[in-house]
Structure formats: C-alpha cells, structure tokens
Length: 397
Image (cartoon, rainbow, N blue to C red; front, side, top):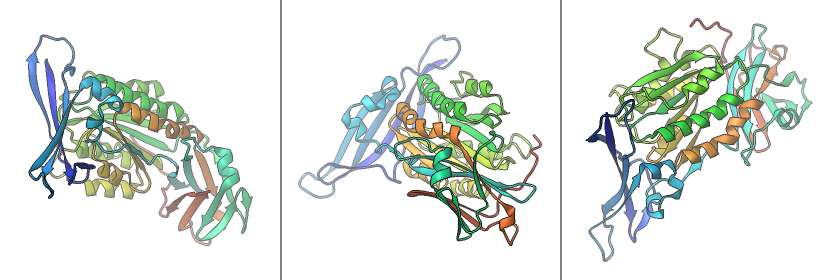
C-alpha cells in the first residue's frame, strides 16, 4: 500500500485592490493522487500525508500594480478534519458556509390509497433549526386544495375533509445515502459523515427502507435495501475495503443510485414504490471523473420526474451552485468548511424525521379523481404538490 499525497488546485480570482471574489461557476479543481512513499502496511491506504493546496490567481485588472496576483495556502489532513480553525487566508479561498435546510417545509411525497384518498407526507424545520411537530401542523397550517381553503389554523372551512396526523410508521420512506470516498476524504471525515447520517437513521420511524452507496472512480453498494437499522448504522461508517480511492465521479454516483444498473428494474431509488424518495449525498470536491455520457441535466430531470428529493452536503472544494441545482426547490443543500459544520447544520433537520406528519385529504371532496394541486402553509413557510401522485404499488425486489 502507499501513503498518498492528493493535490487539489482551487482557482479563484482576486478583484482590483485584492478584494476576494468568491467562488463561482468558473471554478476548476483537479485531484491528482500520486504515490508518495511505499510501506509494507497491512489493511488500507493511509492518508496521513494528504495535502490540499488552495491557490487563488488571476491577471491584474488595472491600477498601478498590474501583472498577476496569487495567494495560496497548504492544508494538512488534520486541517481538513477541522477547517473552521484554519487560517483566515485559507478560509478566504473557500465559499462562505451556507445552508438551506431551514426554515423550510418539505413535501416529502404523496400517494393515493385504494379508496382514492390523497396522503401527503410532510416534515419541517423552523428558523431556529428546531423540528416542527404534529401540534404545529394541526393548529397552525392552512391547507388549500385547488384554490379552496379547507383547513385554516386547525379549523375546517368550506367542507373541511383534511386530517392531520402523525405518520404511523416509516413504510412510505425510501432513502439512499451516497458518500464521496475520493482520496481527500480521511477516515475521520468519513466516520463523521456517518455520524451525521446516523442522526437521520435514528430519527426515522420504524418501517423505512434504505441503502448505502460509496463512490470515487466507481460506485459500490455498501448496503442494499434493508429495514435493518443496525445494518444501516454499520454501513454508513468508514468502509476500509472500498477501493480505488482517488477521483470524484459524482454524476456517476448519483446515476448509479437513481438507476442501479447492476440490478434489475426496481432497485434504483427513483424506481422505488414508496412515495417518499430521498437522496442524501456528501462530496468534498468537484466532479472530475464521470463517464462523458452522464449528464447532470438528465439526472435532475430523473429526480424531478420521480419526485426524488436531494439533500446535497458539500465541504472544502464542493461546487456550491451545483449542490443548489441538484437540490432544486424540493430539496436543500449545505456547504460547510468541514464535516463538523455539516453535522451541526444537519442536526435540527435530522430530528424532524421523528415528527413527520401525514395530511389525508378525503376523496369525497373531489368532483374529479384527485385534486390538481395542494398547498400547505405554516406561517411564512409553504409547500406545494401537484398531480400526478404516486399510485399504490408492490415493490418486487
């Protein structure tokens, strides 16, 4: 095995009098793992010598100085584990931390039952990163069905017919965890991401199903679909057997999660029968290794068509505009300097899985089969879902 050195070059620009222009779509990152020194080591590749070199450089833009300006810094693996304590010069080369996990109402999924009733599964987080609970939804929501208000702050209006109740179990939920195992991710980082995932897993109501996948050059299934909580908690921790660990084929990882080309139809997240389909992804770098035929636009279209919700978690040199694109209106994204920041951002939202609410709209209200549009509002927050809705089905795999 080899101790590896990973070199990541982050190109940003400085404006005029050296004021920093933050990261934008022109960002270019290259990850080049290379053998550093050979040792007879049992087990796994050691990454203790991983270094990230951040560089900002561009030509002068007028003024007396002219020429080009360059600013750089080196980050050790230990620095990567806790970037929040890195030097201001290093942090200035990275995007500002950002999270759209809260405040937000998430319309997780919707389905009609055999009697034609419409079920809508909802979770929410306040501006204080506190989960919204059943009482909040029962007493403070406004439900509008095809432009007609049927529930107003807990009171039936215009015939009512809307029930707000705690979700009985997690049987509507399919969730996939996809984790970046590129060379710049340390064992410490990967276990920290696993801890953030565990916050979600431990809050989910019994009966959900999940799978765990890891990616670098290729994608590998660590844990196939299961309802076994302990198996999933084990699977989201560091996998020493995963190899090779070098590049960041993010698009391929998302594609393989949505479609699961290694299996028959039905194993991909976007193909699951359960109406709540969640993709939770972490990456610490830019896409740089996916197949030329794997297009981001196609992946986003597939998520839109299947109503898959993407929660995108990024650190270090992750492409923030791209995280936002994948998240879209239904999902959310987080960018933090390091994995500690990811866990802090995720905590409140993760807790809201313990408070998923089910809105049931009586089929007898409709002159047609189902309503065309349902809006759920709570104070300044709102969410909307439109037909077509998921139909009852039986998952074969």
